[in-house]
Length: 282
Image 1: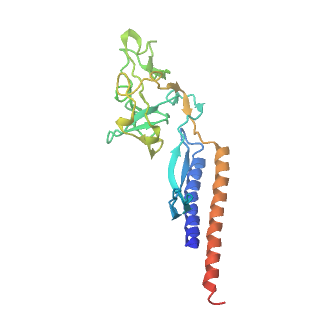
Image 2: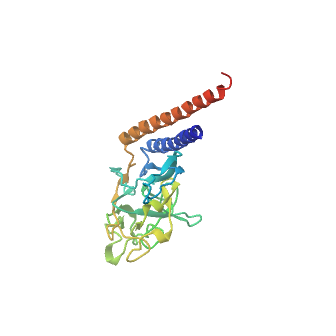
Image 3: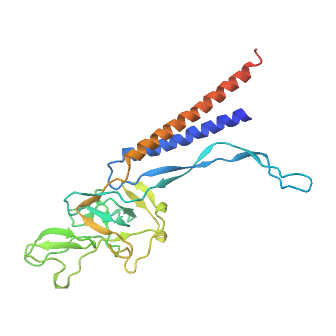
């Protein structure tokens, strides 16, 4: 039983540390991925075989200590590091980063599904919608698509800028902009979540979520940048990956050595089993 136990313990270590190396490899592969959030594996001990249960002491006997043997390690979960990555300047007005808490909300134009993202390399499409690189529409605080307005009569759109409050300012050829004469620019919505660990990665920097897990803003569907715990919008900036290569390489060495140690447990157990099988022959 002990030899079988050592084999299963070693195998559980091989399986678990293989997963650990997969996660580390994925972190390193995404070291230059915009707004990527690194992950780490959580370990937990497996069920223990109880050889003897503990017994309280009596008037005639002393207490008996429990005797248990563990059966290895198991995968407990993957922890995502949601800490903000560094913001790097791009010089492109529609490249947006969030300084602080929050996520941009984007909607698929095909099935209306919504996602949260920190990847802010947006652009205006041929219809004037502010979209992601994959064509998803960026949402404002009311949950509507952000779209360029119609210039004043006789003027044309010259440029756009986005301030730290997420307001889309349109500058026209006559020197005016869409904030004049009582105009109200659209404001990019930012969502914050009660438990960020509940966000589900869907690839391409997108996270699916349920409305129940989102913090409710004072007004509108989504929060306003710079208010109520929402971070500010930084135009011309993109958030970088938060992968720390130094830590990842150190973790990789630890995982590699742990894998090798568990492989050694398996080979030693196999050698002992081989000796037992050969006892008859000798």
